[in-house]
Structures are given as C-alpha cells and as structure tokens.
Length: 195
Length: 428
Image 1: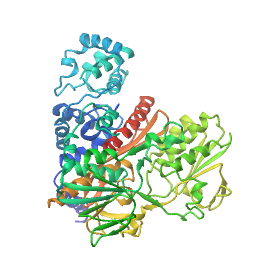
Image 2: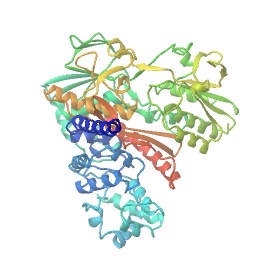
Image 3: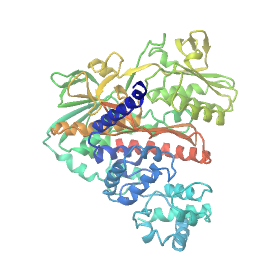
Image 4: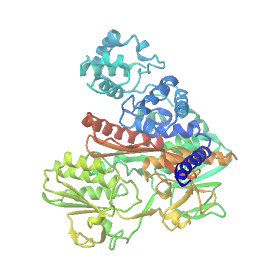
C-alpha cells in the first residue's frame, strides 16, 4: 500500500495541477492586449522607427509563419525568439491578424541613388522571381520588402550571408551567399526605395 | 510651431498613420467619463495616449509637474559622451495636439478618493471618474546615513535624468588617471535593475577614452546578485580589463553611511574614499502615492494585477515603478506595457464591461560598451491572480555563440532603435 502511495499521490497531484491549470486559463487576451506590447519596439500599430522592422501591413500568413519560426528556433534572432516563445500558436495568429489589418506605409529614408541602380540590376537578375513587383508582392513564403527600412534589410541579408548561421530559407542562402557586402547594401537600398 | 507633419517626419513617415481619427476628436464636446492621470513618464503618458486611442469618448487629463519629459532610460549614455540630454527630452505637445489629451502642468498636492478629486498646487480641484497614478519612484533619504538631498549635490544619484546626470558627467572630468569612482547600488526593488551595471561600463568607457586606464570603477552593492550579471562581467572584461570591480553585500559591499564633505563611504568593516561617488539610494513609490494612502508597509502600491486598480483605494489605478506588479521589474518597457493594459481595463470598466485578460511584455536592453548590447526579456500573464513570467519564454542574451560580436553589435543597434520606438509610441 505504502509502496503505491508515492506514484498514486503524484498522479492525483498531477491531475489536480492539470485541472487547476485549465481552470486558471481564463479567456485568452484580446488582440490589442497582446499586440500593443509589440509597439514598445515596433512602434504604435507596427509603424517602427529604423532599424527595427516595420510590421504594420505584413501579410497574415507570412507573419504567423515567421513568428512560429522564431518561436521554435528555426529562425535565429537576438530577442524575438525569446519573446515569441511566450505565445500560443492561436495568439500568434491573433497578433498576425492585428498587424496585417494595418495598411503598409513606406517611410522616407535617405538612400543612395547609385546603390539603388546597382541593386535594381541584382534584383532583376537574382531576386525578382520570388520578390515580384520590386518587392511589393507578399504571400506566406515571401515578405513585403519594398519600403522596409534599408538598415533592417541589410541586417537580414547579412544573416543569410554569414557562413554557418542557420537560417530558415535555403533558397535565400543559396542566392545571398555569393553576393558581396556592397551587393547587399545595394539591394537594401533598392528595396527600401520602392514605395 | 508644432505641426503634425513635423512629428511624423521625425519618425520618417510622410502621411498620417492611424492618427487621422485622433485629430477628428479635437472637437468632441461630450464625454462619457473623465480619467485623470498623475505623472507623465513612461507609464502615465502611455496610458493617456492609449486610452484616447481606445475610446475617443473618454476625457483624459494628464497632470505633470515638468514641462518636458527627460528619459532616464539610456541616460547612462550621456555619461560616456555617447548621447546628449536633449536627445532624451520629449515634449507633451503631440499628446494634446493629436490625441486630445488635456495637459496640465502642475503638481498634485492631494487626492480625495472619497469625493474622487485631485487638488493641484495652483489651488484648483479636478474631479475624476477614474484616476491613474504613475508617479515613479522616490528616494528613501537618510536610509544611508548622511545621504540626503543636500548630499546628492556632491554625491549625485543621477537616477532622475537631467541636472543630476550633468553633474555626474562633469565630475568625471576631474577623476585622476589612477582615480576611483564609486557606484553605490541599491537593494531590491528599485527602478531599472541593470542600470547601475550599465553605468559602471559606460563610466569605464569614458575613463578609458580619456587614457585613465589605471582608474577604477567600484560598485558597492547591497545585493548578492544582479540582472544580466554574467553578461556584464564578460562585457567589462572584454572592454576594460581590470577596471570595473563589483563588491556584493556579503563581501562588505553594503554602504551604511556617507560623508559628502570628505567623499567617503562607510561599510560595516571599511571606509572608502572616492574621487567621484555616485549614490543610488534605496527607493519607494513616488510621494503622491504615499500621501494618497496607496502604499502599504513595503512603501510600494499593491494593485489588482488585472486592472492595476489599487487594493487600498477605489477607482484609483497605480502603474509603473510605483506599483507591485508581481514578476515584472521596474522598467520603462514594463510601465509602457502596464499603461496599455490599464488603458484597456479602464475603457472596459467605464463601459460596464468586464476588464479583458491582460498580457504583458518587458524588454530591457543595456549597452555596457558602445556598440555592444545585451538584453533580458519576458512575457507575462495572469496566473491565479498573480503576474507571472511565461515559462520557457524570455531570458537573457545567450552567453555563448559563434556570432557573439555580431550579435552584440545588433543588440546595441536594436537597443537604440528600441528607445526611438518606445518614445515615439508614447510621445508622438
């Protein structure tokens, strides 16, 4: 009897804890209760100041997919992965819906015309198949990059460029690895210039 | 002349972004309720803006004694000549011009919770339906023997940004090549847990730049541990080897008394003399919270974590550094997050709806050396009536990694971007 007590008690305690956990799970936070917290870094409603990326107006499926990638570590990050782990997939979808309902606005930024022209050529040669309409196109796989902050685009391209950094999209790795750092800067300026 | 275009241009956008609706509210004559907010820092100013965004039919007054806000977050960079105080200074103009927040520049002297009125120094009374108190921290003057307001003119605290920051910065010019700078770090809880340690790094940076590499920055701490400790220790060693020393409470780090005239600090077993002495004293909730009976024996304000309504007074909410918010630290991001959730709770209560389930975030960046950022972050929820960190999420920057230098550089860039974003989220 006493030999049984241990596991049984543990089992009962586990069930009780499980039940308590369910009972304590109130209704999930509303989309604004969740999403307003993002504004501390990404700006009110997702319109950020550089170089933090603009997230207002990103497509819902892309947003949901990328936050899941941050959450499960598939996409490296400085801080986003640590925060994404704090949300359920359903909450991630709510946050994605909140920001995708905003209208994309391209900010004014200082860009170098020579880099824009150089970037346009690289885009047409290597990137235009996926990043259609000069980077305006977006779907679940492809983010809108036209009018994003150039410094942020440069950060992400550098991530794909760095040897050994585990990145989520192997096509991007294949395309970006042979580029030079001046190519990366040119591409960033080109997409940033597209409104 | 303040124009909306100028404000948006400061951020980089040429057209209004969801502000159009706020402008239309300027002519609103009828309100269903009045909310008065005391204190225009990260907490109070956030609540004012987000309450107006959530419900244009709520009249919002923001009472703040200073004409402008000077951010304490990132003010350590001023000590390293990496930033100006002007870059930390924000006007309340946009809150009134674009969001219809009614600004009152004055000091609240009294709160009457029974008749729901605040009295301001000008002798005017302002009635409220709900009051939000966001006063920040106050010092426990005298908790360290001899450290009072007069002493802070010789041994600056620089824990409110402005004149105190300037004073500490100017004193650093007089540190001899082999001089000693002391930082007295406070016991928990206090505003900005990683702040004293970021400061130590940035002061060491300034001394290093001025070729005073034999100088020392010594932190005398009341505590045994501190936020992001391993990351700070590594940053100091990488950038200023041997210059920064941390002395925990158990190694006689606890400062009991100061003598400002002699610039000396007394611990239990020792006495230290510094060329510059920065004393960050023990803290409690801001004065008005105490006056209004919102504090308990701890000196801080107990609140219902769902609504941030005071547990001691009805219809009064307390947010930011002054409140007891479970696992959340006293930080700018925490105050901003609490302000938003509090605004949505108040909106629901005014409309006789149940307050929604809150969700909170904190992100604290530190820049212990220029171009070198580290962070701690967390997501918080209500569990059994307490604010707790979501398990498995958050945490500090990993201490190892093949991209170490690059990630520090990225985090420093994001730290500075965070500052522009959060202040735009509040003041723009």
